[in-house]
Amino acid sequence: MELYSLTIHEAQALLTSGEISSVELTQAVLNRIDQVDGHIHAYLHLDREGALASAAQADQRRKAGERHALLGVPMAIKDTILTKDMPTTCGSRMLDGYLSPFDAGAVERLRNAGAVLLGKTNTDEFAMGSTTETSYFGASHNPWNLNYVPGGSSGGSAAALAADACIGALGSDTGGSIRQPASFCGVVGFKPTYGRVSRHGLVAFASSLDQIGALTKDVTDAALVYHTVAGYDDRDATSVDRPVEDCLGTLEAGLKGLRLGLPREYTGEGLQPEVGEAIQQALSVMQELGAELVPVSMPHTHYGLAAYYILATAEASANLSRLDGIRYGDAPQQATELWERYYASRSDGFGPEVKRRIMLGTYALSAGYYDAYYLKAQKVRTLIKQDYDQALKQCDVLVTPTTPSTAFKIGERVNDPLRMYLTDVFTLSMNMAGVCGISLPCGMVDGLPVGLQ
Image 1 (cartoon, one colour):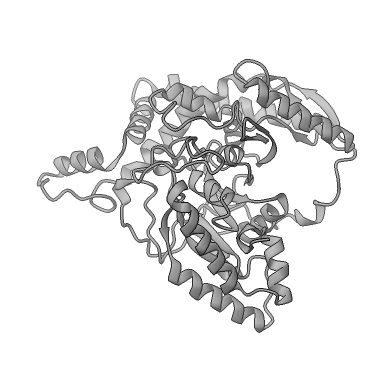
Image 2 (cartoon, rainbow, N blue to C red; image 1 turned 90 degrees about the vertical axis):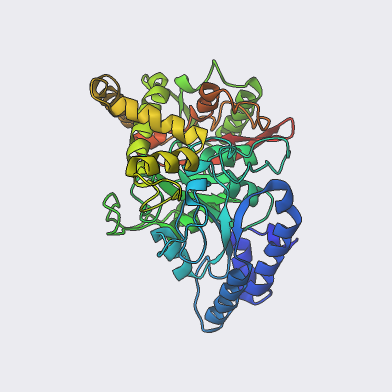
């Protein structure tokens, strides 16, 4: 087995036994990046020297008796998460070359654990997109078929992982941005419950929906990364002050007696038939392993997409107002008047999708429309949260497709925003309810992965 194809827990076993060093592992991954990233364009910035220096330091820490699941393991970071010694561009011209003076809370925890940070991965601009095509620096490609999208907005992290160009990765999820690319690329994508992982240092898209999570090669690795980055952070007002759950202790429990809720609203129209068949096959396997299938209803599901795109764009329009070409962002030298500077900076600095969402959000928050759109969407959000509360009284976990289809060709939906937004129809309600969600690979259709959520 090539070193770059190891999972986190496999790598850690070899590191602990002394069969390999972190420097050897990191060099193998860097060599793999050299082989494949010219094709998939997963990385926006690669810190080769810093990664090897961190790997050497991890080897010394291990010799001194230190132990941690991520010690010496090469990890990739989505470029919406601040890193002190690397650029954070959010896939936007607006922040091209921006260097943060501090690390995000999750990055701090990775560094403290001794993880090796390889670099920053591509993302839809300010995480606004479902394919990584809105990145100012160009689209990423799906390793299973380079003509297809890897998903988004954490598409760079998912593509890097699927191509063995990292051992694990961090992404962020506002409406499915970890789980959807995980589904398209055939890896595991875990969005924790809102408030469990610090948002300190995550460049905000929609603050009440955003959450940092893990993209990994298997579920054990997802638990290991979650245990590392989760926990209370007083710099994040929404961080929950409670002990981190022992996910690892339940991984071997099996499915016997587990009640799997099947929401009837997540099947039927819009679901690619082959994806539905793959989900049914996975459910049959789960039944054979002792799980019980329980039909449930989540009646307000159909309103989720519309409500989400009102709430998310409203929050985005507020959050991105700080990018004015003065404190942050591109500062056009030819502009002399204040409003001229605002206009030039935001016109040139933002791409079409970001502008579209800012305008949608500003409209929804404007006088005369606030009650009709934003306030009504908040009420729908409450109803969706109640749907989850009621459904989870009847079952232990809800099972749905992650996406309505497998990955599609690059450019196929870029000029059809509504069709593009429908890509996240099965994932976004979990962000609105604040609950956790995970996408697992569950089959292949015409050489492309299918995800089960």
